[in-house]
Image 1 (cartoon, rainbow, N blue to C red):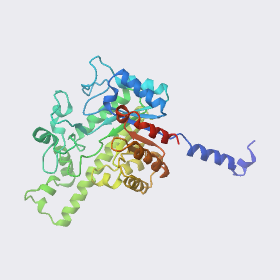
Image 2: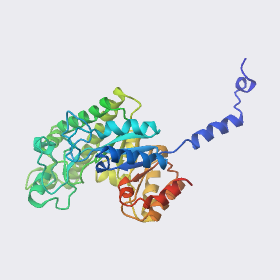
Image 3: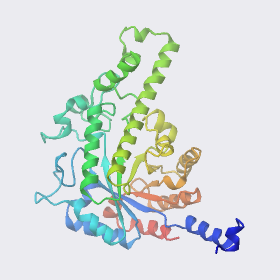
Image 4: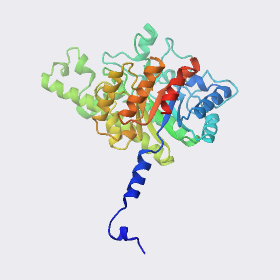
Length: 385
């Protein structure tokens, strides 16, 4: 026989309170990014896991792909030169150690950024040596390899692969599939999943795709050198600029959906996340990284805005812009920096994030602890409040 309150459609207040309490006080994520040079030996990995366990970290975002190389055993990507020749696999090592402590491991994968040194890689199998035609090109027709070869980085982040080149995205999807298939991961975390800047996307393959769809070569919109398209009526030219911007944004959004679907087919328990620009509008219009749409369409499980502002006002302003997107706050894990500020200003941002409703917090990065262990004393005290 059903209780009277169920027959009458009545739900007792104490049960509502219980459900509400469980939802609100579910354990928040307390994570930290771990840069690749911190996992190059068994000793470093054990030190990291001990640190995370001692201080109550729930999730580690461990960088296993830095600049087109692998910090794990791969049949696709060349092994990092920072790893010992013995064949040590730090990802295979850290997963069971972390899981034994109840800590989740997310494989942090740098996507389009593939090189950032002032000289090109000497490894023949490196992706930029094997496929220079995949490298990103700016609106003046110059690819990133030219800047490296002539001027070092010349103020740029480095060598990007083209987000509009289908072969590039197929390759990156294979990289992720290999990780998902071979390791007991809790998550895949994407970084540099964006265009280098507004004036990029002009790799020949991407231009061809746009040309086939709109009958316009996008590079002529800004660098036409007297072409018909360069002499378009301003209104028509603006229309094609909007098409070109939407095209770049939509292509990247579509690729995110492909990644998520691919992961779900193998293991629906693995979460897909991305490090994103903290201002949603700048992310959309400058880097074509429309992460609010990724969340709204279910193409990604959560994002980590890199809210690395040093001033409290700038930090809060970015959070306000995020809240204005009307997204579930439990899918936005606030990224807080340690490398560019003292421990008290960094810790204060933990409080600001919590006050704004962002309970899941990720610290950048474990590097700071390795350089100055006492720095984290204040952060850990704030976490415990």
